[in-house]
Image (cartoon, rainbow, N blue to C red; front, side):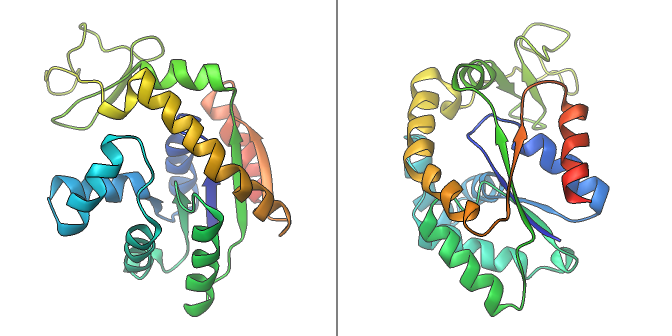
Length: 213
């Protein structure tokens, strides 16, 4: 099963992707995670990508597409995979179609998780992460037991550079400009399904399971 998760930053794609991954035993491939790994390891690709990421701009297609092709050839992708944060533009969607058909694969479904913009801003600007173990918190929805200290490893939590309000608003604008045409692209293929991203995580997941089954 090959799926794409679509939706603005902060709609819960990562969370739902993890649940789908566990339920159907297929890996969730997040461009964000791959990019952050490359940045952390200071690979050539990581250095190139970092300058774009720091300003909230999109990383160029050729960097992303090369990375994804390498990733989907790994053993854990044999029974399918979930793409989270890719494709982001119609050019990337066309590159993905080409890449899949070249590898004898077919896209099954595109899930669009839908959440109002002001809710997204509240979700993202309140997010705090642990720089040591990677645990994620939220000042309102999931605060740590002790103010700004990680429950798991007692490290001081940070706000990611791309979670400040000005960068979040820029990311949403970039998303609207580049990804709205993608929605149209997948509507034409009859593979797009809209999922309401408001409410309880498990209820949203129950809806997704219905769609996939």
